[in-house]
Image 1 (cartoon, helix red, strand yellow):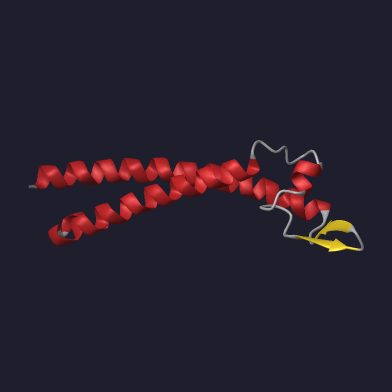
Image 2 (spheres, rainbow, N blue to C red; image 1 turned 90 degrees about the horizontal axis):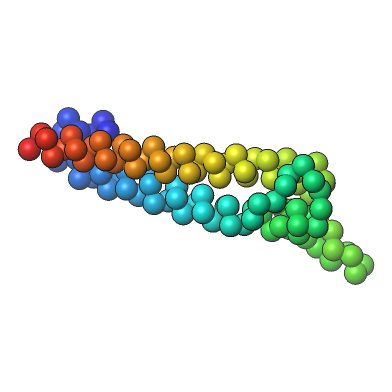
Length: 109
């Protein structure tokens, strides 16, 4: 948005805004798919075996154990759900900024 005053920087600004929109959407979708509607308050197998949340699992004497505690996994779950929401919000903001920047650029010509 700051590059709109300098004409030769406008295409770069539009490209960066587009890249931010695409990566925010891709990150939000990827995280949402990994979380698959998991309830962070209910500690269960879905939460324990989720590779995004458990910090990795190891086989110790035939038992699969997570590297993190129950509280840490639930905390990661809450943080990841918030991050997903912010990624989708970032996508919306980036698309709005991209649209406004494009309109402003077209009017200035």
